[in-house]
Amino acid sequence: MNLPEKSDNLLTDNVLVRIAGERQSVSCTLHGTRRREAADHATVAAAFATSERQLAAFVRDQIDGRDPVVEVAMAAAYPEHAEDTAYKITLFGLGLLYMRPELASRLREALRQGNCSVDVQIHAQDVHVHLVAAPHDYETAYVLCDQSGVPAQVH
Image 1: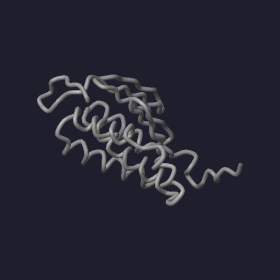
Image 2: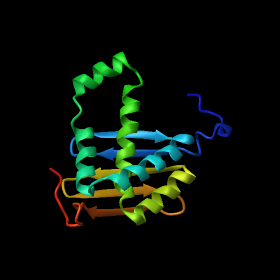
Image 3: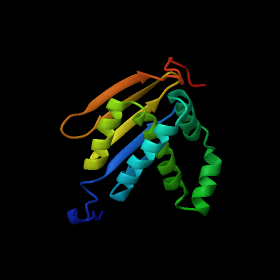
Image 4: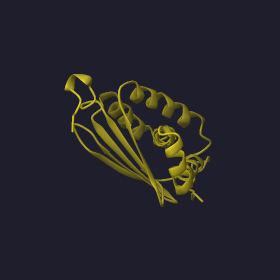
C-alpha cells in the first residue's frame, strides 16, 4: 500500500467523522479545506435549525432511511455518490453538535487542528459523542431538546 508523503498533509490533518443512527451509519474523512468548510456549514445548520430534536430526526432519517439496493445501484452508476452523500449528512450531523456551545467549541478546535476522530450515535432521545483528539479525549451524552428547550423524543 502506497501512503502519501507526510508533506501532503493527508496523514496529519484528517478528521474522521462517524455518525450512526439506529440501523446504519456513515463515515466521512475531512481534510484540508473540507475541514474548514464543514465547520462553516455546521455553524449555519446550528444557527438555523428549529430544534435539536428536529435536526436529529433529519440526520437519523438520512442515515437510516437509505435503501441499500438503491445505494448499490447509485454507487455503480455514480462512484462519487456514497462519498458525497456521507459528506452532506456529516455537515448536518456536525450542525446538530454545534447546537451545544461546549461541544461546538471542542469540535471547532478539533476541525482546526485535524488528526482526530468524532464518533456520534443518535438515539431516539439522546446523542452520544466521543471526540478523540489531542491533548485529551472528550466524551459526552445529552438529551435532545425541542424548540423550547424541553427534552423531546425523536420519532
